[in-house]
Image 1 (spheres, helix red, strand yellow):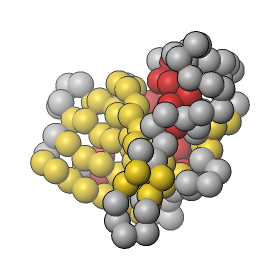
Image 2: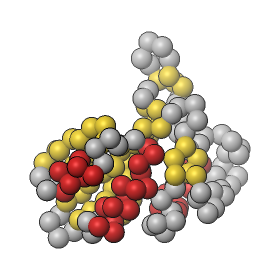
Image 3: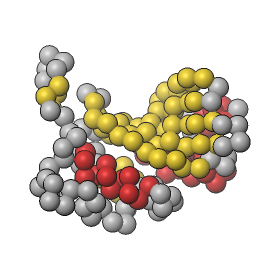
Image 4: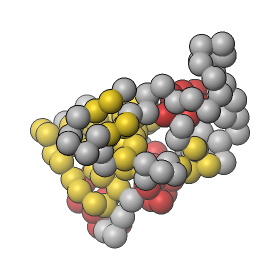
Length: 148
């Protein structure tokens, strides 16, 4: 099984694995392992990149990179949690051209820095909000409430 192979190869990089069903898996990884794990999924196991998504939670900035192994219909999500104070991770845009725009969107909306991205220029915000303002960032109160 794909999960067993990944656990064997990336033993120290996997923090958690959630198997929702036989066709949907989420693996939480150390952010530093993103490029090597994505490369292994793509070049060795034949997965393709679908899309990425992000959210800001009390844990930090969470990113899900969604991959598909089409023949068996397996969707594998690489999940990583970035520090709230300095959210940064290596860009996948040098491996997957399709990540270029979504990483730019996450940069603009959340302020996540994608290291070695070829072009983090504004994509959405021109004239909508000031540079350095990240509209999807949240301020968390100590009692568990969220202030937007």
